[in-house]
Length: 196
Image 1 (cartoon, rainbow, N blue to C red):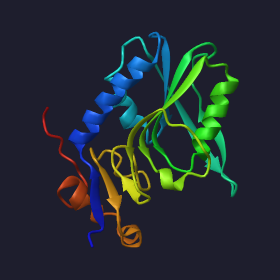
Image 2: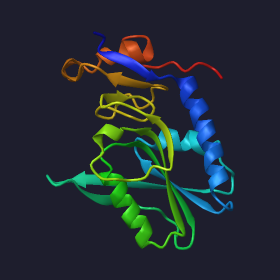
Image 3: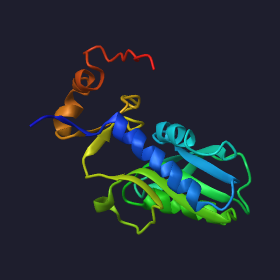
């Protein structure tokens, strides 16, 4: 068994994100939309999705921290614009249990957003604990640990341009550098970008 398996390659990711951009533009009645990206993992998806949306959309970011055994969520960085009476699009890398998304939605509703929709690149439906709606879904994925395209392990591998599943997590956790050869094509862990 291979320790790593590519789940979504870069071309497929970009095609689906372009389609999601069309779906999003068709669902909002006007161009006054606040797009709120949830950091850190959502950064890459947010950037590529914004490339597909009108320049009139406002981009904002929010960062959350989870603490305690009960997994309470607090805001580490908040949006800087008022949301009252505006259409809001939440942009997340991944929805799994639904707990974080439900918390964010409650926060946004309390701020008086006119409408609130969610775009998630990846959806782990089998892990759902709380019933939350994902309006724009990129891909439904399994329960494996995922790396790349914003998803990390201890802060590493976010910049891998595709999404990979870790099929043998204990082996990976013992030696995370084993992913370097797969992700970057050499054991150096240094990616040399190709010119566009």
